[in-house]
Amino acid sequence: MPRSAKPAGANVEKYMLRTEELRKATEHVGNLAKQEAITRWAESGGKQTLGAKQARDSKAAAEELRQLNHELKTRRRAKLREFYLEQEEVYEKELNDMGLAFVKARV
Image (tube, rainbow, N blue to C red; front, side, top):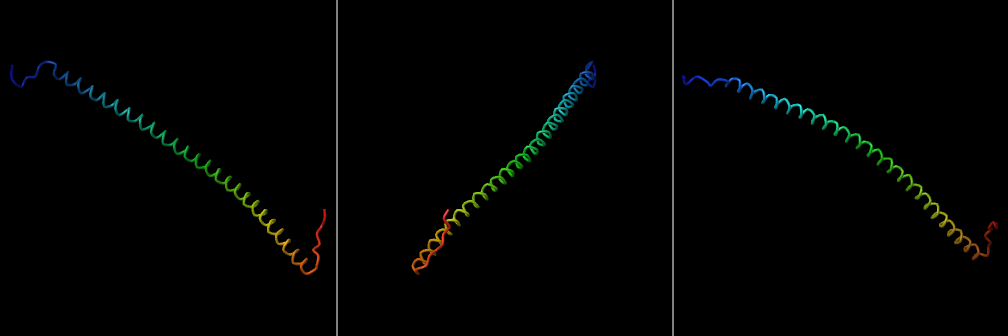
């Protein structure tokens, strides 16, 4: 047998190994494509969820601001009412000191 001679069936074995290698590579590419599709889907869902969360947060902040404005107006009215009553008492005292009367509506 000459040195350059290959054993019988070596080319078939080499072909089978190469075919198996290509099958594994094709399977790997398919798995990567599935992972890419899943990743894209997950990322798009995250963006939608984030947008919905931002909308909820914005709505909650607007409602809180509306309530705070209402509370501020209520407190201002109460303080003004208190201030006007104090001023009325001071004015009435000044009039009484001068011997004048302050007309009050009695209900």
